[in-house]
Amino acid sequence: MKLGIVFEGGASRAYFSCGVMDGLLDAQIMADYVIGTSAGIANAVSYVSRQKGRNLRIAQDYLHDKRYMGFRHLLSPTNRSYYNMDFVFDTIPNKLLPFDFETFAQFKGEVVASVTNVRTGQAEFLKISPDDRKMMALRASCALPLLFPIIKIGDQAYMDGGIAAPIPVDQAIRAGCDKILVVLTRERGYQKQVEKTMELARRIYRRYPKFVEALHRRADIYNENLRRLEELEAQELVFIIAPDSMHGIHRTEADALILEELYHQGYLHMQANLAALKAFLQPSSGECTTHDAKHLEVRG
Image 1 (cartoon, helix red, strand yellow):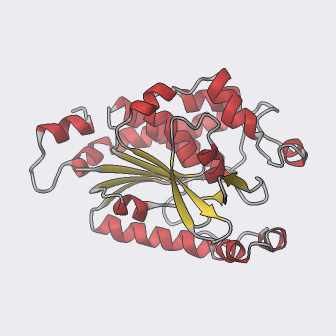
Image 2: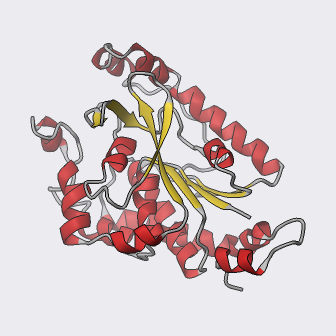
């Protein structure tokens, strides 16, 4: 059996997912395939490197730091992003709160970031390499329109994966996952609306008509992804963990106490769902081999 985990993005709202990730680590549940969008995958790499509490430490120590985010960084000609990209994706993981690249490299499965190709408007899926010390794939997946510049990787140009593949569950299926855990950052029943900044985005990205079209369809794509999840859940192919409510938390929330509360909500949700998740992970055929049981590392 191949277990996949899909993490939705949501910037600061993804601290709910960080609590779920640490709950998974405590339960010794490690997936074979990890895919996510934006902050979902940016935080999930610490799950893969088995660094429990690392994401919470970032919230506690750095999100409120003026070096982390703010409009002055967006106005900087050397950054042009609301988030100070070199501080977030280089200084923190390589100096201040080291990311365990060695443990990450030992992971036997795949870790994948969803991105949107600016020229085609289509979703692409970039494998995250332990050799990418500047975390360019994560920068691309997190590149929110208007708040980030376009991220160039090789001869391709990318932005936020949440535009074309906000909840990339079908990519996990294409990768051969038999059971899939999906961690959302919006409560059940949420429906995305067209964003008020759409007209501004249309003007700014007018050189990329297919990307503008994808932006125009963003709400529809997201809501279609949710309907797809409902179908897969009814077929018992996915297991969903979602917050009860986001309580109006904005994606650029930096208050450490609010983010800690969100993290603990995610951790408690993971604990509350653990027994049901373990039952979901049992092969329906009853043919779980010793190798399967060991590989999933599900503690009884």
